[in-house]
Amino acid sequence: MLENLQGKFLIATPEIDDDYFDRTVIYICEHNSNGAMGLVINTPTDLSVLELITRMDFQMANQRNYHKDQMVLSGGPVSQDRGFIIHTKTEQEFLHSYRVTDNILLTTSGDVLDSLGKPDAPEKFIVCLGCATWKPEQLEQEIARNYWLISEANDKTLFETGYLERWVEANEMLGISGVLARAGRA
Image (cartoon, rainbow, N blue to C red; front, top):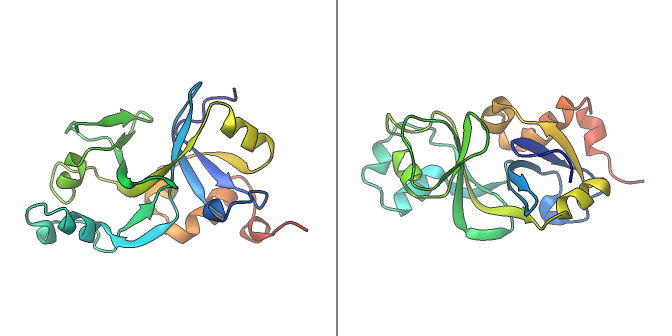
């Protein structure tokens, strides 16, 4: 098994032969001998976080203080009916949270959505529907086939960079220019 990739970025290369993962950046939430799980962080859906919260009928959703243009992301092709929220650490504990790094958690319970826009909410967050998963050794095989590059993750790329710029920025963190990153196979 490779080094533990939990809390790192996977960056799709032109070698990947899967339209779903073309030019994606995945934040790895779990990586161990049982496989890996991560969330695509640069593929927005047509649904905003505000619309999602309103549809879930949380009280006074329209009166909350958060970015009205923040979109729900398509986190991956597995369990697309389930929500996965990556967020910064808070004083409040949520029902189903998993520590990814010292400062980043993955929560799958609705109580984190109910907190958004309130004073006790995570300062930074991403809401995804679906996830990406790998069986034992599958991710390692894909990396060996040059489908993925590995990069350290950072809060700026994870939470602040525009969705569609995250792939280029993640490549540039590895010293690969945006022009070279876009090049296909010859």
